Amino acid sequence: MLTKLSALTGRRALLAAFALGVLSALALPPLYLVPVLLLAIPGLLALLDGAGSARRAAWLGFAWGWGHHVAGLYWISHALLTDPWRWGWLIPVAVPGLALPLAAYLALTTLLAWKARPGWPRWLALAGGWTLLEWLRGLLLTGFPWNATGSVWAFGALPLQPAAWIGLHGLTLLTLLLAGLPALGRRAVALGGVALAALAGLSAARLHATPEPEAPPVDVLLVQGNIQQEAKWREDQRWPIFRHYLALTRAGAAAAARPGRTLAVIWPETASPFLLPQDEAARDYVARALPPGAVLLGGSIRAAWTAQGTLDSLYNSLSAVDSQGRLLATYDKAHLVPFGEYMPLRGLIPIRIVQGGMDFSSGPGPVTLAPAGLPPFSPLICYEVIFPGAVTAAERPAWLLNITNDAWFGYSAGPYQHLAAARLRAVEEGLPIARVAQTGVSAVFDAKGREVARLGLGLEGSQSAPLPGPLPPTPFARVGNWGAVALSGIALLVAFFATRRLGRAENALRASHK
Image 1 (cartoon, rainbow, N blue to C red):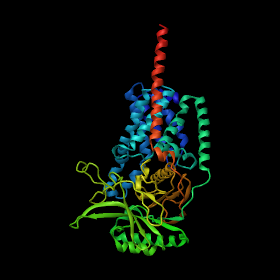
Image 2 (image 1 turned 120 degrees about the vertical axis):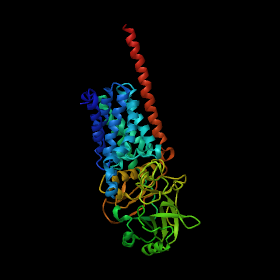
Image 3 (image 1 turned 45 degrees about the vertical axis):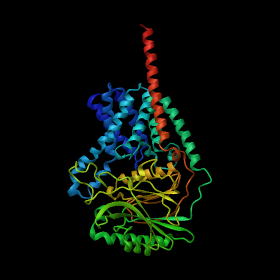
Image 4 (image 1 turned 180 degrees about the vertical axis):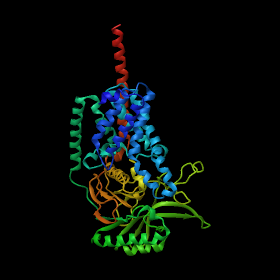
C-alpha cells in the first residue's frame, strides 16, 4: 500500500494526505485508536517520497495537517450552537478556518523532512521537525498546543509515565518514531516492538515503585452542577444556579466531612453567578453550606472599579472562601482564550464573538496559593492546563487545581481532550491534580496519572476523594520542555548529517564508475 501511495500525484496525492490526516485523528481522545498512526505516519512518508519537489512536499503536509485538525477540533463548532441565530452561520467556516494556520506547521514539517534523504534520515527528520514545530505551536501567537501527538497515550497511566522524564513533546517524538517504523521495513518494526516493550517495562517499574508519597489529611469534594451554557448567564437563572451549587455542596459536604481532615470544596470555572470576591452576601450563603473548617475553591467573575465607581475591568477568577465567609485568596486567569474571553485585533475584526461588552483582563501569571488548612496549590483556569511546563510558579506547589467550563462543547470529544491534558500535567510535574468541569468530566488523578475519582460527562452531583500526595520533582519538572527540544534537535542534526554524508558517498561512487 505504501508503494501505491508514493506513486500518487496531483489531486489524488493531496486527497490521500487529507484522508490520512483525518484517519490520524482517531488516535486522539476519547477514541485512542493509536494503531491508526501505523498507517497515517508511514503513509505521509510514502507520499513525501513521491512528492518530486519541496513545494509539493509542503502542500502534502498542509493537506495532512488540515484533515487532522478539522477532524480533531470539530467540537469547537458546538460553542456556536449556544446562540445559533447569531453565530450559526460561522459553523461551516470556524473549524476549517482554525485548522488552516495549524496545518501550516505540518507544511513546514514536511518541507524539512523532504530535504532529508528518503529512508531513515527522512523518518528521523519528520519526527524531529514535527516535535519542534508542535512545541512552537504552543508558544507562538498566544499558543495553542491542543491535541499534541503525545496525548494519544492518555487512555491510561502506564503509557504516560515517560512524560515524567521527557514531557508531552518527548512523548510526541517517541510516538512519531514508533509510528513511522513500518516505512522502514519489517526489521525496523521488530526493533520498534522490542523498544516499546522495554519502555513499557520501565514505565511499569515507575508506576508501581514504592513507597507511595505521603498524602495530606485533606479531602476534595468535586461539585459538578451540569449547568448548560445556554442558561448560564440568563438573569432569571442567577439565583437558581447559585442555589443549585449550594445544595450540591451541602449534601456532598455532609457525606464527605471527616474528623481530623480538611475538606476542600471545588466549584468549576465561573460557577457562581455572583461576584464572590466582592459579594459578602454570596459568601455568607457559601459559609452556611460549608462544614466547619472547610474551604470553597470556586470559580467566579471578579470586577474592578475606578475611583469614580465605574467598571474598569473584569477577571475570570478563582476565590478561596472559608466556612465563616471570609475571602482567603483570589487568582485571576492569566492565559485568556482568544475570541472566547477577549477579541484579538480589536477594531480590525468587524464581528464580536465574546459575550458581553467588555473583554476579560489577564492576571499576572502562575501563582502558588496556600489558604489556611490546605497544602499549597497551583490554580489553573480552563485551558491554562494545556500548556506543558507552564503550570507552576517558582514556589513548587503540592498539587494542581484545574477548574473549567466545558459546557461550551456539549457531548463531544472536546471535554475528553481537555481531561487528557490535565492528566498529562500531573505525570509531568509529579503532582496530583483535581479537576472540576461545569458539565464534566471532573476527576482527580494522583501524581503518576492514576485516576482516583471521576464524575462523568453530562452528570450533576458531587464526588469526594482523598487528595493524593506529591512526588519529588520529576526530571521534566526540573528542565521543562528543553529535554524534548534537545532530543528533537539531535534527531534533525543526525538526519541532515546522514543525508549529506550519504549524498557524498553516492556522488563518489558515481564518479568512480565514469
